[in-house]
Length: 138
Image 1 (cartoon, rainbow, N blue to C red):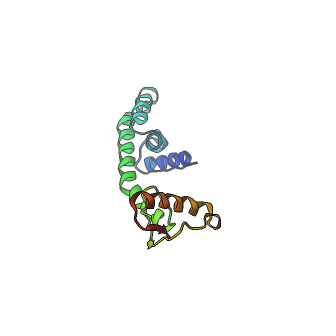
Image 2 (image 1 turned 60 degrees about the vertical axis):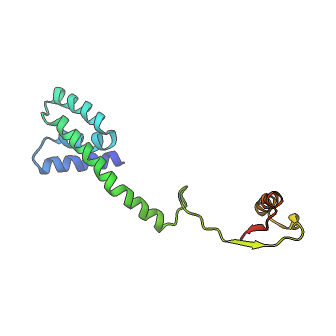
């Protein structure tokens, strides 16, 4: 669907500037989805087969514009969407509140959910090794 939209937009822009409609296809999905190499290859093909003299230049120019526009707009737009929808990414900083409590006896592990059992067990091992207070994640 995106390729069709890109080709239609490319053809309309080419017609608006009085150019061959094949230049619009080169500037559409060929360069925007294929990149510089595809635009250059198809540009040579369009020049040799259909006689479109500016196909390579137009394709490489459109592909370069697409990469620059993607770089300039893609990062800030993605960041805005991630913040708006509160999406957790690998680089999201997780805030954990720590509460230090003295432990006189091991907690009753059977009453804790499995996720908390693993944490408490790890922290008990940590406590035995360092002779410090148990740090419970809350």
